[in-house]
Length: 361
Image 1 (cartoon, helix red, strand yellow):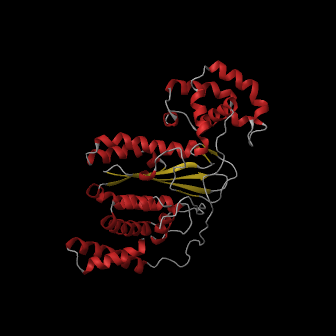
Image 2 (tube, helix red, strand yellow):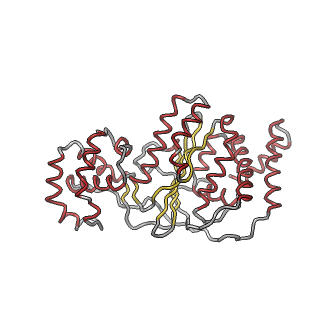
Image 3 (tube, rainbow, N blue to C red):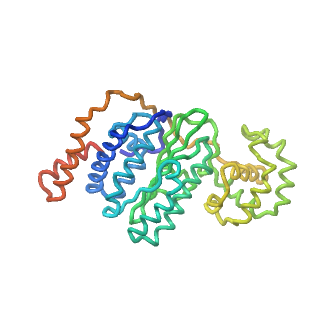
């Protein structure tokens, strides 16, 4: 069952996944994902991966920590390796990962697109990958800096994104899930779900519907002469900031505002998507533009955290019990056997396969 707009605790755990466990996670996840692809198809698999609770449950089934932030990177890496040999046959491709792998996402999209002869879709998918990353890192300023980005797409153009950021102050992570087929507007609460430790009192949320006037204000701002903007801001920002939200002069970055304006003038964005994709425009620059628009046009950006409620998963390493390697291996073999039998004919093995699938609904 899909549960969206919800959260789950993701505390930071140190250490690495044991190599022997990671190998088993790859095998088991390959069997599970292939079963789902065979029975439900690619779009449904994307929908499940875009559900933060289903993804968390998958990590538990694979034997990883119940509530560790490392579940995201480890499970993401496992399913990427699991589907890689099957990618072209099934027409589903997983790109990106943690750190440097996240940065290589465009190159991986291009590689898979060329192998699958998807030339018309390659650039669109690269742009989507970059846009979603910019939105969660810059347009939604909640204190979590992205370090993991997984972009999943199909040969039919469907896509999903799983990415994660870290709050260095609290050592908690926040995971963002996107399901492309349901995204009608990137700036109307677009997330399928967000997994996070707590709801924050105030964030800068430019992805919300409530921020529409603020977004329009930023774009209008970029059509005004720079000298006019700087003159108005210099005259007003001292007394206006004190009565608007819990912001300081440091948040405003008045001294660097001219450089930010020059950069955005050069890109000449036609809409907010173009603005987000402006090279070199980061979270602080976007924040300065937003605050400037609020001052000049008397508009307000949404300060509400998009997380709706908190749901904590208990348990620590080794609980409720340690991994039983024999049982784990038997589960993998049973799934792999059923997959092989399912290829032959719709026999009694298919019925067993369908019964098994009920466990993953």
